[in-house]
Image (cartoon, rainbow, N blue to C red; front, side):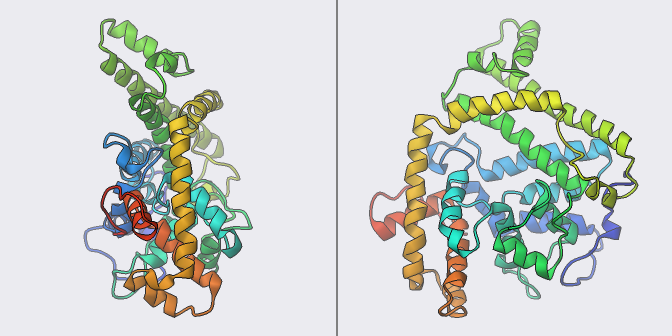
Length: 389
């Protein structure tokens, strides 16, 4: 049953370019499907979370992460009576704007783009779905509904000024009301992102042997999960034991969010989606007790995984790749692929506009294609095969 504060696809604020409605799919279902079929979504298969794409087939990529986020988001949305299709659309799109090499690549592009209006992956996702995907006859981008665009832009909360040029430019032409919180559906997508990466970073860190199962079993929340597994299955082998404990950890986070959201909604008593946006605080979040425990876990991961010596070495190497490619294409835009050179021709002499084109190109690269391009331009070993998409 749809809650009164859920976004209703029949009451959508619509698309920037008016289209006839589908016979069999709601507007939010069409948004989800367009995202799945987007080139940028396919490229997530070869973009990493923490580890570089060629380091192992078992580690999460942006694609597998996005699928996991969407699964969690649908579960929470259903429990709260929200629109599952809108929730899933935002969840699937939330990482579209990430450049190669995860947050390392984003940090490098933020530095390089500082003189040209900055770089932010949420803003870049908006640029992708409103401009860079060029497959449809009547418009650039995917022509998503206002609600999906709003969710992509501000699922992490209101966007304060100064903001990335990409987000500021789009919202000036199509107001996404960036100063308010997003819909409950978008908030669910955001918290599902937190749940997914808290779970799978522990799993990937174990697989990479950056820490041990015994160390995890001493962390808050996880200590209870391992104790429950050991009580139920005292002779369980090593791999099954840690999987069962992490599965329980996952469930604790999901159940906590649902319980806390229900309590918050009961207090707020929202009668419409706008009541959620105007609440002045996020409604879909962890309880304070679980949030405090997660801060301990994130601090552990920061020291033992994100700043592990092997990860730090690779971060330095891939940062150099981005720092080399950006000035090279700024100086030699004629070496960009044909479709990008056409854009360059329209901005003759405008260094800021050229930088944005170069940034669009590099941020869209997969890990392997960025490494391959760097090897072709500067020499050195080529790692893997692939392309921009």
